[in-house]
Image 1 (tube, rainbow, N blue to C red):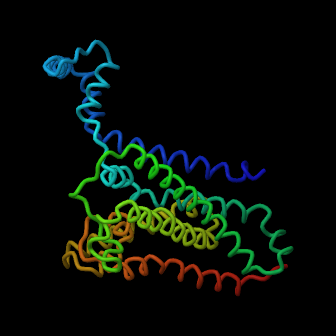
Image 2 (image 1 turned 135 degrees about the horizontal axis):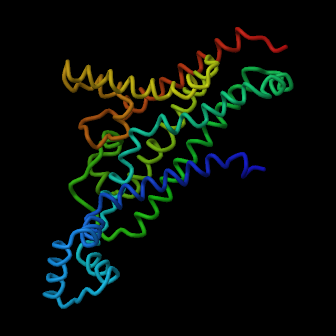
Image 3 (image 1 turned 90 degrees about the horizontal axis):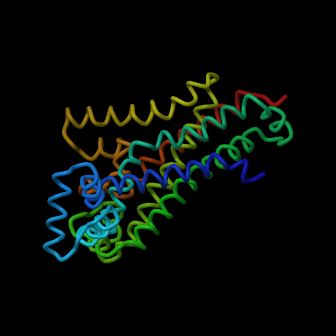
Length: 291
């Protein structure tokens, strides 16, 4: 029964992990070379000739794969983490839409009777919203942890050209390179648990005020992409100042693109939707009676 109830989040986990793996594979040099060897005859001939010079004779795809992996099979832990998860700065609304849809459907079915039995409309709403948001966030975070372990298993070196800003103003500028694996575990907790959780709670709460299924699903997309678009327009007009960087929801998901960020401010701004959710639920519970 529990597996059936959480089947959608198991699917979210599988999709998220697949996206991470596909993203880094597609971005890898060795994947490009293997694809070129298969599809480009000139490239295949040149690579085969190069292999002969190295004392290797390529007879088939397996030989080509082994040779290419020997030449290009370098796995940078930080590179793989960053570029395997970069697309998720655009996918947060998709994650939030799942629990939001479930909340919307639940309110149309048996929630009225469950609310009556609970005795506390506010308590019932908070439990329902936080539970669904927690499941959604855990499914994404579990996918990140699985991908993190895969990167750790394949790691054979670390890059020195990538650096992220989150936490460095608190933990020190040398923390990133001195504790690289711990850094990405901490950063991943924020990016793949806290942020999905916050926006899921916010979208679920907003769904309380929509009756149309399309509105329920579209709200997290309109909010997330709308605020991002407004922030980028303001940055184009006034320059890339901190205020607008903090306003943009995607900044915390791609903090390596910016410098001199205040970690407390960055995280604090993204907790504002939780505060809005609190006020919305107070409003909802004060204006509806349990009958």
